[in-house]
Image 1 (cartoon, one colour):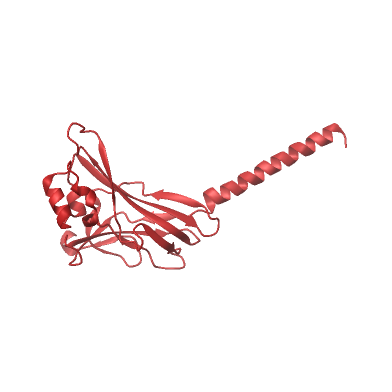
Image 2 (cartoon, helix red, strand yellow):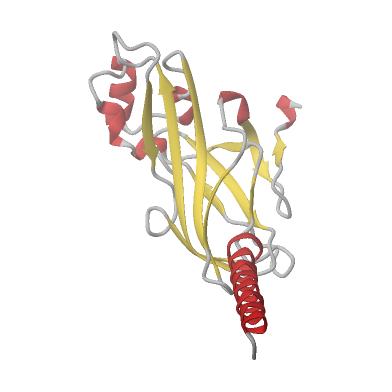
Length: 209
């Protein structure tokens, strides 16, 4: 084998190796990854299950082709203008959900094989952070009494919104991906009514139609 043939062999082997590596990376990080879609609205229901008398729930689905497991659920609330002297600053609060282990769901199957879609409650009334001194007195009192609602906290400060984020692992590739809905939820995202059993939509109460 002459020098030209040797160089050609090295170049072809290198290109093939890089191409194969890129293909594996693309499949595991772009294709074989979890796919999650969120409900556009938050369901609000009256209840006697907690002192606030309301239940706020969100829903999501796995629209990929494989199971997603070890899902970590994060509800991040942002409120602007809470602290005196810092009107442009955002305060970040993490709110508990109704998952069995605080922030985790064991497994979510694809909706193509399983019609079950997780529905989780946002438990604002269980978040003690709202007892901090920079919150309005009425908010601190409601937090201590466990009567604080999601509507209450979305209507303090200059602006407020929250985002639901999920970190999940694809069953096939072991790839882990972080999700958050593109449009943040606000007070306008809350609708009284139950979720459609087979979808992500809230069926509004008749008085709100």
